[in-house]
Image (tube, rainbow, N blue to C red; front, side):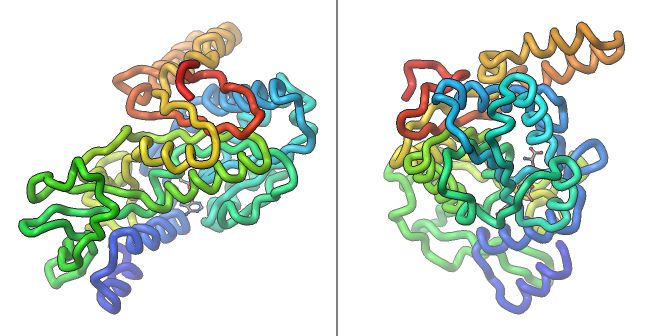
Length: 352
Ligand code: SAH
């Protein structure tokens, strides 16, 4: 655990998990290099340029079929190293130069250290601490990959005589769960209330708020958004809080502020929050989504220009992005579309 978080818990603890997780994530992204082979985890845009390129083409297709409105805001929440956006912009520049000329790039990023990296990848970007300062006077195209999973999670636990809200406490023997505060039952779906003691139910209020805020903007401004993350479609019980350090799972409480901390995204909850304001498509597993929007063709095109060794790498990346045993099934894609904007590519068309 980082000394700052230990101090805070000694001074003010026990504290709700969501509060501790927010501080731990800020500290982690401000001080560590999370991404890539030398970092703590590898994300889809860092696996292959194909990922960002295909997202860029998905956005360009939406924009063209929406009648090419100009100007347009292209935003990314939690851009990491800026790789996805750099790849998307290159693909947009080739496939839809009119969109490239009409867009302005906006990054939602809190970490000053990551902003510096992002500025190297995408010098033209403007930065925001959160969604609220994004411009409102043009349609919005937004993408967020592995952003919702990093937002502060609330966990409820079933104990002998009811449900409690998990808080984190620092004892002389290390961090542990405090279970002394009762849960507000309004937050627990009826079907899980009778789960046995030890059961954990999760809500990510921050992620739900982000989805609702984006959907409200799409309804008002027009546009489309993609949220991509690993997760499930609730209601479920289960503790999905996880920490990754050097590519391995670590104890989330022991490594607060020093490891990447995240949780599975409940896409049913995210979809519900967004559907109150705009049309929602999916969640659709990442593998079928990427294949429906041209992953295999893009891989073939890249392979034709590549050396034998490079070809094998491209094929390995393609499989990693879409195979069920890799990222293809655990990762899900949710589309949110504003009024008068077209049905998006990549989702089964009967869903709406
Ligand atoms: N999308 C990137 C990075 C994912 S990591 C990729 O796929 O590689 C999560 C990103 O979200 C980081 O850039 C992190 O700094 C940012 N982030 C996390 N919580 C945030 C918050 N509350 N507000 C703004 N950015 C946040």
